[in-house]
Image 1: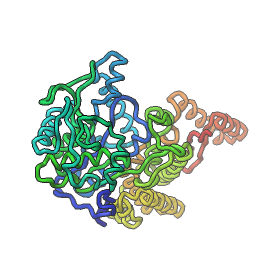
Image 2 (image 1 turned 180 degrees about the vertical axis):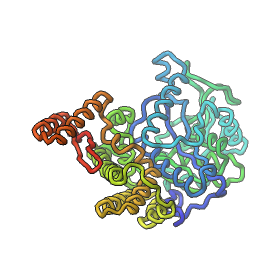
Image 3 (image 1 turned 180 degrees about the horizontal axis):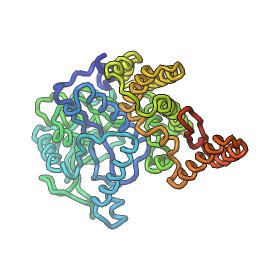
Image 4 (image 1 turned 45 degrees about the vertical axis):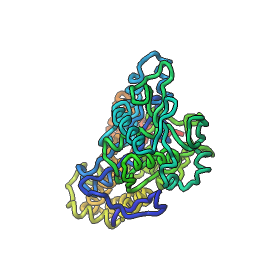
Length: 476
């Protein structure tokens, strides 16, 4: 099945055809690094990580170039740096390192490129110069503004009228603007803020031009896929298109496909730092496995809104528990790793459960999750029927599919014992050994006493043909 993606510009699903299958390019708007990322920031990271993995599967790992930018010039960065009395790089380096570590804990592969605004300043200034020369931008009172009247397709991506765009962008009213919708490409820095020299005076770039210049420098225009959250369609992506096309002189294409993920909501509101209703990834992963957070972010279709809640996260952990339990049972039945089945047989199983078809149909992760459970059920059925070869095939297929999506990377026993430290684990292992000895001596009273002690410690013991295993019980 060919890969299809919902293209925001076309307003329909389209078969994905890259300009060059040997060099597939994707750009996704990344973080502004001044604080910890919240779970809403993580949704596009995880969504486009799945697309990155799928593109690499279809075209080859070396053929896909994925750039996710880093905004390291911003008012909030400046304010934090001034409050701490440090250069902006101290703030941005600190939070970029934290961001990358937090996203890695959610199973996100590192993008091929992470261009930074501060490292792209020459390209930004050069692109602004091209826009001025092409009569698509003008200098006024220390600013350079994009002339929205110079781009006839302005508003095509969002489908908004000019009046709606002016209202929606909450544009600043300034006497030097030719049109209310015109937006800043370059502006003077405030006293004490970082500034860069330019033909229009010292200052810093506007937000929108940064991405256009980073794309042009890192990937080259036009690109195959431009991704980001639904909230970026207007004004950010609308303005990106206008700048990028007008800077190219020939008014050609900017991105072949526009892919946007839906909002992550908290109750009845969109989650955002400004509303104060944020759940920080950094804090969440201290208490919850990263795989469970990733599952929760992918359990709904990426284009649909997703309501974040403790119940959603608990259901994600429970779903993964079910898959890991099947793998744990398979380890006991097959005796650890067991023989590796024929890869062609495993691929045939994945085709049977329509795993690849689900992902190629506009990243239908809910249907792909269903395929994982079908494989898990098949694995359990093979174990119950005593069919070692079928069990090995289903386990291999489940692991291949799960790990492709960023799941099932832990040892099953470690997954269920993940909240226990080394001292606690040693104590539990000792009690289980004592219980095994008591059962061997038919000292049932001691065996029952030890089980009660384990239960009081929040430990569940599972007796199997290859011995006893244990896991921590869920806490409520």
